[in-house]
Length: 68
Image (cartoon, rainbow, N blue to C red; front, side, top):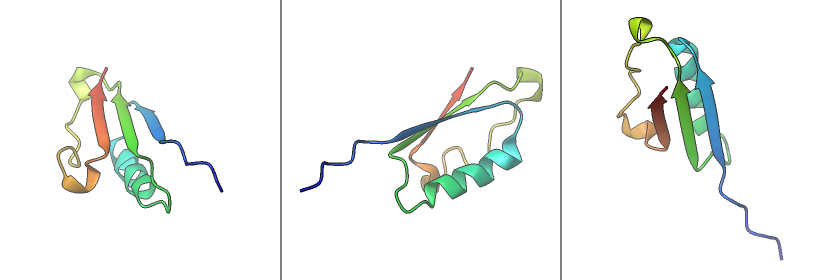
């Protein structure tokens, strides 16, 4: 009998990398065994900050977006 698989969380730290981040998240969520939770910590300065288009998209429901 195999042991249960523990939950998996992935933390991604980013700084002004919005196009690359969207592709990374799509690939991460498409994995055979996707993470149970993905936390994106965005350190982009307020002057350059853009609200990512995927925030609020149901396809990205497991992704928590945090501004630092």
